[in-house]
Image (cartoon, rainbow, N blue to C red; front, side, top):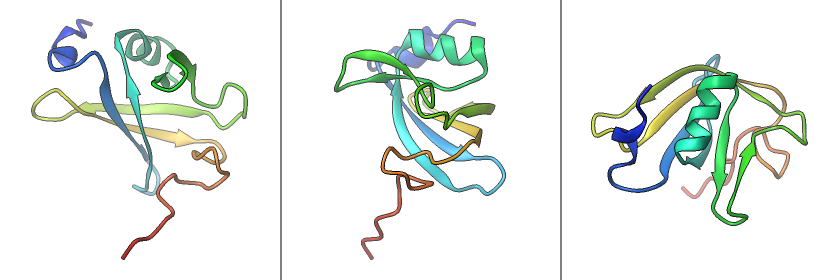
Length: 104
């Protein structure tokens, strides 16, 4: 697959991670070409850590893996929606979703 069209605007593309069974949005992370390719190859999510400047496989150390079900691109090819089967918590805080802080 040619990933170039997803990286025209930036070297990173935001990826919204959604739990397939519930529709709950679990997290948002960023992918570069290599992490996107690894995600397609392995069937599990890989991201680019902007803070550590390295690839990371979600759940590799915690066991809270994200098995990819579907990957969608938005109409502009600049955001991904990835539906997953989540094992354990998606958030590093231990919460199931990173979006647990209700503001209103």
